[in-house]
Length: 158
Image (cartoon, rainbow, N blue to C red; front, side):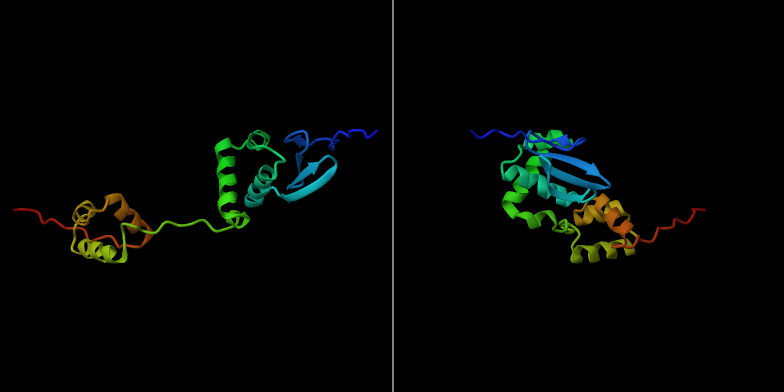
């Protein structure tokens, strides 16, 4: 008669569930199924952690709630990465972050804004004329995409 063998884990591991556990040692995170190590990654490798923990969920080895509890990650974050994996695959975890383009401050609008600033208009007035928030123009000036305008000097009345 076959006997059921309980999974026996090394001492000091943190259980994800009754089948899977992990341990952080020497800057690396080791994942175990019983005594058998099944995966390892650097502790600082966030993308690799996200990929492997998502694969545990996709393959049915752990639930989203178990991953959330074991690693102290918000459940909504775990769900977000499962969705990312299902929609875009493993490569999505290692893709560079997408940067937003300057949707309001296009090349043409930047030229117009710089012209108005060069004429001595204040940032809020330039923003009103072009339909752009002053904050957007200030950010462009701080980042060097626009040059600050010349200050108007007022001569004293006599």
